[in-house]
Length: 318
Image: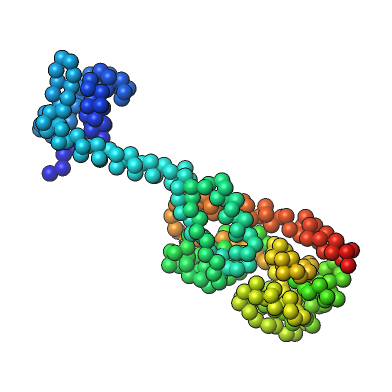
């Protein structure tokens, strides 16, 4: 049968044993001695046993109190540990965030985002999975992923909450010996005779739908990964379309990277979470951090002129 015992009464019992004195225990709990004595009397009354033996010199546990003491300490310790764990989660000293993104973002934006977040919240464990966008969405559906990242256009219904972050212009990667690299930008019309080595799923809907059909690439070579596409471009003629933020990746393959214009098509990037999901403090913190970090990071790309100036510098050295 459950007894109506309070944590305050249990803490008072332990405080008296630690101090061997009602007056000292009262000071430790910031109570009057009368209030502390009242808590002990209530506890003994509700349990129906004497827990403390009192003398003029000291207070000690009774025979029953000696058996009861370690049990009480264990309860209070477990409670304190649970409360500390909850505080750590709330204050982001602990936590787990499971993130997934397709390869283009995995090779460019996500490592920077995760490193920046982890430097601010080192106690939060961010686990990252670089998988195709279909697996990103599947992970959200089966709750193995907390936050997914990818092209905003892949979600067409309400099965996922979409948080738009930025729209990054598409640029084109070319071999250094391609005549198109002589200009400062490439038009879709000028690109149409180059085989397009494409790794983007749904390119017809998300990209080419924004380009006049007469300027569509006449030949397309399909692969699954951006690294594969860029590796192929190193050894054969063609072109690879990437968001401008992929510039460091493209340059790493020894390729030229130029704005793709007439028209300028933007690749919309979004964060995805399960609709109606109750987010942990760590997951909510990471999502909010990403929503601030990604637009700020994206602004450092073509609008800043850095990549365009790099292209000019390479031309001048040739």
